[in-house]
Length: 393
Ligand SMILES: Nc1ncnc2c1ncn2[C@@H]1O[C@H](COP(=O)(O)OP(=O)(O)O)[C@@H](O)[C@H]1O
Ligand SMILES: [Mg+2]
Image (cartoon, rainbow, N blue to C red):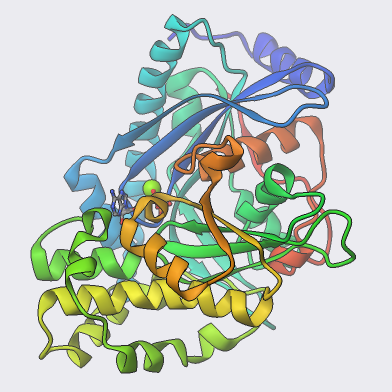
């Protein structure tokens, strides 16, 4: 990679920073709590237009990295040295994968201006009254060095510094892309965790709000690994073969987290391995497919209960994230939420697998053009803020 002179680097960045009217192309980089891989999305931001996804690709993580991330995520294990090594290793790997992505988009004559990376969350400790803490790894300095592009990162810490919980942030993009003038909509991102954004019509006096509503695929993936040695339940086929134990599901969705009002956020600390083991202990006499059906039903009920409790006027529910394509989940939501259209964000022209990566691109763009973010209704932030930190190559 050709080294740019310091003067050129600074000039280039300030040129971008100073020119708010120019179109910008940002590579959004997402590593979700599922630890399945890295999502890259090249997004164009043109003045007075909605963000547009130009090209996207997911790179599955090599098994060792996936295992390392999963072990770093384990709330029972605090190993500073492991985290430091992984921070650097993941930064380098991400840089290399982005370089491959750059070669592909170059052939399509697409040139990015910068990178916006979420990193990988290894701890997320939201505090309702006290301070919140969050830690994303995947060193942006390594990415900038390897790719030769500026990298904006650490968006959640900006939110926490402004008094918020640091999550969920995806509602910031959901409200921009998906709010209707006339219809009551909600968007659910089913990743490792399921988060929901409630979008009353733009003309209504009710403002959008959001929350993490419970586990998405995290518990299903954890149980599939223990019971079947598989990474996930493809299309929900195992769950569809089983019978969910309604009583066990009811016991779980009665827990305090599910009932507490928004804003709220959560992570692997609550729904990680320990939670999976507890559920498996309770269900140890069931057939494996019944366990998977029961766990999948917890995801579905958490979403449906949230809507019934906090957004009963919802007319259209748009799904995105890896779980959005799971037939079992879509069917059960259809059964539980009669009268609500269960759709995909692709019905509104946005690929459900890249909404999160687009979000980081959007926040990176906000950083560059100096747009202040108001996430108060989503994360509880007390002030507006410019999201992220800059790392130059
Ligand atoms: N065909 C599929 N059938 C069922 N589940 C799937 C399928 N494809 C992906 N998934 C689920 O989606 C998860 C990845 O979703 P993703 O949105 O990337 O989550 P995260 O943001 O947490 O990484 C996988 O771990 C898996 O559980
Ligand atoms: Mg993912």
